[in-house]
Length: 593
Image 1 (cartoon, rainbow, N blue to C red):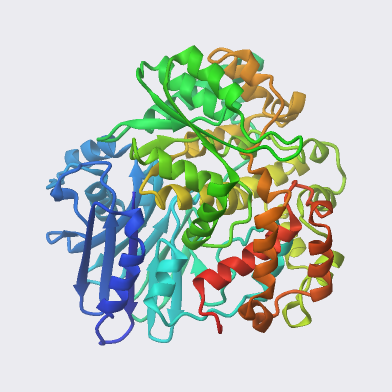
Image 2 (cartoon, rainbow, N blue to C red):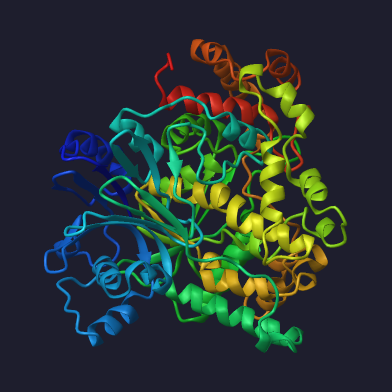
């Protein structure tokens, strides 16, 4: 787990080493254990290292294979690298290190761009070919590892974070109106390749890009999800689906133990993280370290779920750490959290993950986490209405969009208004082959888009801000493929995640399975009061906000007058959504931008 960056020039001029150095320095938290820059004329690659696999200096990056003529910078973890290493050795390849980085290099030489299809894991990497001058960029199937880039005439820069790209300089920081429409409508998600900044793009998940020495960039997807049972599953009964659910999850959890340091678990007290703990202990892990966080309650909304995490701790005798946060600590941490955000991320639990990660990093470098189960096994409240609808797009919009198109037109200042970009994006995604039923269309867009640019992004972002690696077994691509095979009625039944719940009964206590659905709670950011409300007010009164003029003033005033009455269908604060974007822009851009 690391931070990567680089610059590629499309002429005979030298890459800007100072810019690459600034980008690498800005990612120091992602990789405090080592750093390096390799320059090859018009190409320079930078790296910050967090030592997880092969702790020796032999695995230091950028890694150069002089025999093959390749140089790589890589962020992630390839869980099947021992098997791939043996396969490559059988082909005659010799290795000078013991980790997964060199396996990627050899795999690229052996299989070309198809190498990505051999990897089970999370990754973003860049490989420079000395002899051809080409550069390959790639990102894992579920977009767990980020990869951003900016282009100017004659050059391309890339980095693991947007703040790193900004540190390099010479980035167009104008607001992209289409991205703004998506942010305001599509649950604050800006799908790849866009970001909120016009001059910054992100490589889509499950995609690689080949960049020629002349600057031509060829972008190709290499993986997709197909919904519906496999041929061998056509006659499955409930018990068969339960058996395979447990089989695929056991493999995914076991894979994510591959490390040369201990691996713990973020235990929220929900079904998903509890199952991860149960499967690890079932597999013989003893002395497993687990971590939970809680906040002050607001009104009748509970700020922690300790009573459920305690059940799992008592059952499996983990070495548990509870972190209780009062609001006095939350506000300063929130400002730090925004400073580390790669993109504006509005969900209330951002600061929770940020603070939890800071605490966990005092004990461990690697944890497993339960993100992704709700999206792939249909755990959210908007999935049951998708089962019987004749209007897939309309039903999805009603239950998922933060505001309808009319309200969006009230929200944004005239200079930034666009057409119904979010609606058009959903319609285009729903029209793709491979998911025929309305429910499958919703699950697919949530798995391939929302999941990646909401929960997955914030988990990576905030764990890495603490020099902590998070591994997500529910996003093992084999688990995702299997979940797409499961009939929809076995997912949405009885409040959602039915098949996962039934499988979990063989592993964890039922009081955790049958509890009311919870969320990672930070009530202070849902019901903006006191200093949190003042922070929102200050965001709009800042001179930079007034100069930028993103919002319709009357709409903002209406939210400020009664913030608790303006909650999105997904239970978020509309006021916080607007103010968070402004706070992010003010934090990361020059005040006069």
